[in-house]
Image (cartoon, one colour):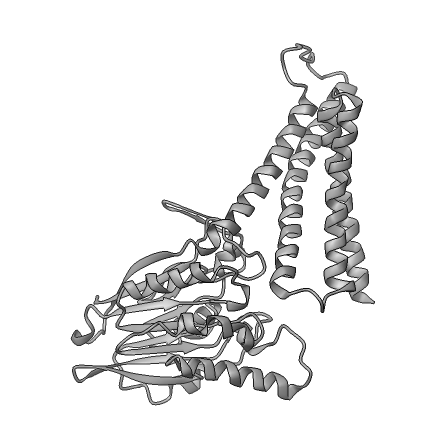
Length: 414
């Protein structure tokens, strides 16, 4: 009942947005001939009707009969549509605020003379066209993010300077992937290309920092033979992310959920990935060692806190350098920074929200209002954190500005 009530409120809100934007459409077409106006109005209202049918069918009437990827694509389309409409509505609201104050000043007898030149666009029409242009441009950008951005893999080379690094590890190359989310992929050829890009870097060590799937281990079946091509001669290490536990879906029984996690863990093993469950490993080169630590998911706020850093740190005092795999970057500031002697942590989780701007020195995404560390390299008191932007995607099946990442680190002595 609560779900239906929430859905009803959501649909009502969407329709109110549609009605508000319809006023802008009427402003623009008011001088068109009646037949053209009628066609535009029919087309305009047919779009929200189709959107409402998609929402009700996918969530209420036929949720079990729709393929997950197809349903996700339909919902993503509705999401993009109404996010773009909301942006257009914001422009209209700003215009209406300006119009209100102009009306108030005019009413008070202090408004300047209006410009009545027939060669200028009336203010209300200008605002209407601007609003629809903003919404349309955003919708186009989001669509392009699906077509191109989703698999526009970028290699990011990072020199990682560590003060206590043994000489034997100078120049060691580590490749990192995070947040594969195999259940969301819709272009296997492109994904294979991303894995080939990683292997072209010839890494000595490979890290994977969680979220192999969205919910269920079976999502990875079609991509097992893609990711098992990843090889690194000195070792491949992995950890779990919040989506790997199956916490965001329903299970027939607690045993089914446990079995799902066991199946996922077995996939790591079969690929040769050493899954670190609050554990550490000795990485040895020419008689010298560094510690590789990994914990289960631990996230601030409402995210699951399965991991135990205390367990992972046991018997690691002998390592001059310690590297930590921990899915959620909030873990670093909460339990690692200034509380341990871990030199560098590797995380993912945020995806950079798959939406933002990275141009030159400008780096912005809405996710930064939730996470202080959300993409790239961070350093404080000689301790480092690198947040991978993610290889895959979830929810919105695309990326705008924050592109999928393959991180390649070269270790250096500071």
